[in-house]
Length: 106
Image 1 (cartoon, helix red, strand yellow):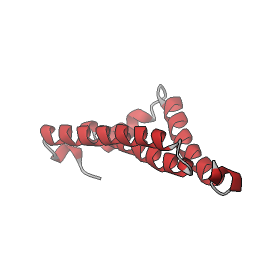
Image 2: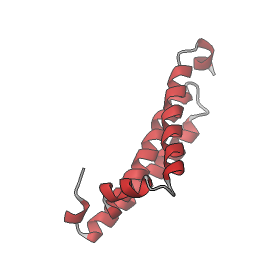
Image 3: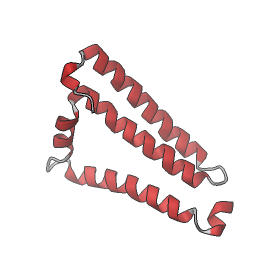
Image 4: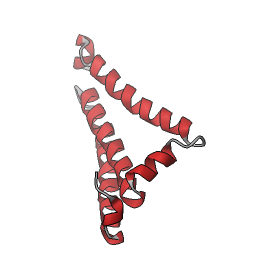
């Protein structure tokens, strides 16, 4: 993980923008691929990548340690748990559904 304090503000801002835009793109792409045959797996992969990229984008603005501290503050703890568990469960559920024969044909 890059040390955000060693990067200039312009560099951090550029990396934030690139990660954020790619995160939004991957999330929208995953949602669009959901309607294709076998799209559940593609949805899980791209939507999870989108969420990770969007979270990584804020690491460039405030640094990873500060971001983790803020995410796990008592006022944000519930939202953090819901967001992380939904990303995890969506990925796990979509992979388990892909092993059911009728789910692959959908």
